[in-house]
Length: 448
Image 1: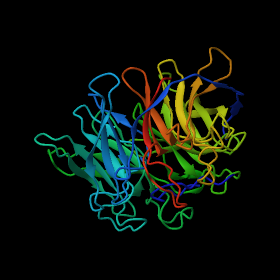
Image 2 (image 1 turned 180 degrees about the vertical axis):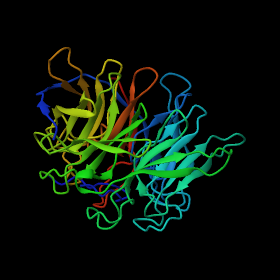
Image 3 (image 1 turned 135 degrees about the vertical axis):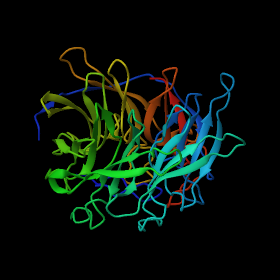
Image 4 (image 1 turned 30 degrees about the vertical axis):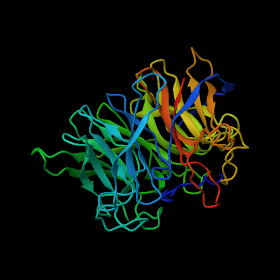
């Protein structure tokens, strides 16, 4: 398989059958309206993941800076139609309280934000920055303008997991669930002694203000069991569904093509699909529809080796069947997709961080294009799924079009518009290791 593009500001990522029904899809170009609502600047740059809304319509996400180890920003909508969005940095990490936030945040009904940092804390790790990562809560200011951070858990290594890099998910009882890409089973051979990763549960104290308790639900062992869990977990009916980037035994991929798994609250794990390469490789999380089906993307693999969109449907009992819905070509339709969302009609929306116009972002090898936003239209009856490109990002390659590049997913706003962040592009003056101004990133709004 082709090498995964390695452009990451933090440099922290270490990336790598059931019956498969091939459904050949057609590609279309849709007319959509995209608008940049904020251009990041060097003091607040390179947003590495997607966004979350609060009930007031503010957007939140993590970013980096030219000095420091990451921060959390808020974008507030304009008071009047056509006005400017307002950006504020609401919290800055210092290493001890976390470093390098790389996963989307989640928000509760009170407006508290929850997330993870890849590094930082007091744990005995020194991967990029000291510390093994933390789970944190940010509470809105009650008096004054200061947000308050509470560290819910400080990973210590090795058995409890290290380096969380996926969004958290709540259950109805207020427990938090997530995964770490390393730690757990330190004897697994797949990751050079740093562990194969875990799925964990965090339970709040019964005493207000007390410490949260971490429980490892499953430690991956490599091989057929999978390794490096990454991407969003999906919670339904007491079960957690997720994916690992590698492992599973697929010989098409150097370290295995990854798995989809289910874990219950007791820690019982079941592999529900092992990817083989042609049906995708390197899955990065799952989402679901109202009918109980699971959907996801793979970073690589498929017909053209540029990633896929797949569906997992329960076939009988605890068995699942995978259907390949679309294979990206790496061209105008995009390549290397990120996690998706769905609408009430069953259509899927997402982004790719390469592909589009191959002339754009060529200054950052091995990128070929700055990525696209896409829609996959659900078929009526036994027809094919159709991919439509909603927007092709330029990454500020053209000065007259200071657009973003390398998008990391989209979310729906209250009015049905899509919002997302791009890691590069825009009008900010941020330079690559090659000395080229690639922009500092953007936040955009898109009509689906």
